Amino acid sequence: MAHASGPATANLISADFFHSPSGVHYRICSENARVWLSFERPGDSAVNGKRELLYYIGSGHRGLTYLFARDGFLFESPINWYGREQRWDMAPAYQKADEIPLNLPVVTSCLRCHVSEMQAPVKGTENLYPRPAFLQPGVSCERCHGPGAAHIAAAHAAPAQIAGDQSRIVNPAKLSPELRDAVCMQCHMEGKVAIERAGRHAYDFRPGESLSDYIRYYVPTWPGPSAHSEGLTTRGLTPFVFWSSIPTWVLPKTCCGPSTARLQVVLIDPSGFRRRRVLNR
Image (cartoon, rainbow, N blue to C red; front, side, top):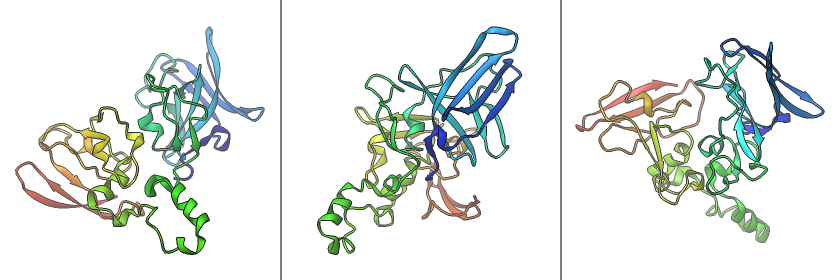
């Protein structure tokens, strides 16, 4: 989690990748203490250029991409590192593209779950961020335990008392099931459609609050060809779905642990039939 993001120079994976469908050759390398993406189409002098890469997103274990800015707007690199396969390829959904996708906006739904203290984009835009776009690299303690400023101030004011006073720090284990699960689901949940509440943003959510006060997720109605999988996060956690006409997947008591852990999941369908499943994750 601590290595989920940061300056591009802090996690450089060099690239020398040729994409056959588009005929474009991509390179990522370091030059004068800066990281650059260059691209060209051999035999076509009109297709070439370079972008300075400012940040990386993803630890590289499963995947990694770099971000660059154009006139202040933040975009994803057209090529991604796929850690499990140990190879470079085009960004998801662009493997067969015949052009160079340099206009992939970095939206808050992706950025907020890989960084700490993300700065909100300029009003009326989806990817024009103040620079730097985030104040801390990686996923910090505050993502699960809430802002720590009050706790730190209290520690400075009365060091002898702070050890026994944890009221200023959110302990997910002491929250109600709904609020506890929301701590994980703020990032480990996906749906077919995600709709933010009017006047609110998912990135304003803080541990201890109700996630549904900020955003709601929807998947296809039950039954359907992929009603389950559409609601499951690619990171392996089990989401709570806010649609009464479809089954509800309930998070297990713990969401952190080794990949071999056995997670108990309860499925409730609209007819009220309830059954248990044990999943290997």
